[in-house]
Length: 373
View 1 (tube, rainbow, N blue to C red):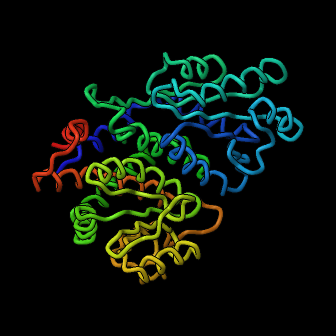
View 2 (cartoon, helix red, strand yellow; view 1 turned 60 degrees about the vertical axis):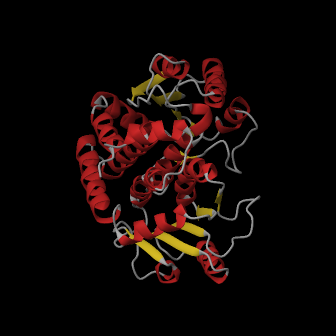
């Protein structure tokens, strides 16, 4: 089974202008504060990578507008407070279309303050459309990096929402490579992306058709609700999957929830929990797993430690190697690999449902054919 979108992601990540990447790297090194922003799953992509930057020694402070400590209700108000603490600030916006409403508002607020008080404040925009509103702002006030991410023109966005993975996963890989560059004080972008791509292919070969993956699909194919969760960066990985998987499950009358969300119902016997933890020892995640098992639900976990408590509690487990030799102050690529490994779940579920003869929305079928060979 071939997933065409994975090949396209690799192609587009490899074709990014390395001169622009090096310029981005220098902006990161010069900054005292980095503010990542975006909309929807593109925002999750950049937050996953920037959370790893924040762990590095000598790295800039990382602060998002949603953080409790963000010192203002608007970007302009926050910068008024930030200016007394940070000399060099970098706003990074991740937006495939370059026309997302909230990121544009944040960028315009940022530029308004910059023009009035401090032209050392820079903006970097990653988008598939450099001629977009955000792309032009990045080019004028800092940097714009083009990351290709075509979407099938026939895709009905109103029905399937943000089903596409190309820009979201591609930008996640690109940002993760930049974090590795920062950590290793290296400009060798291609070396890191080549390593990532090699490992992803190996993980796909090992797991995508494994008994664990197929057993999870057996559960998804039946009437069941799904609860997906993690803590910290794992929570952002969960967010990236929830919306896509929910579009498919909703078509057959089921729902997908963030684990322990504010409106999350009580799991039932036969439901599925998908839990993510690099260490496999996160207390809250272990509690969710045990509660799910006690209620008769199934637990599928993605961990970085094969002998972890979460792996032992779970019915099905995928183990990545990233956390075995982790040391404090180093970046983890576990979250990027997990995002890639979970991305085929909705696609394979569509295949299962089609083989059963179920009638699915036309837009879901077009999405399926756009990703598969």
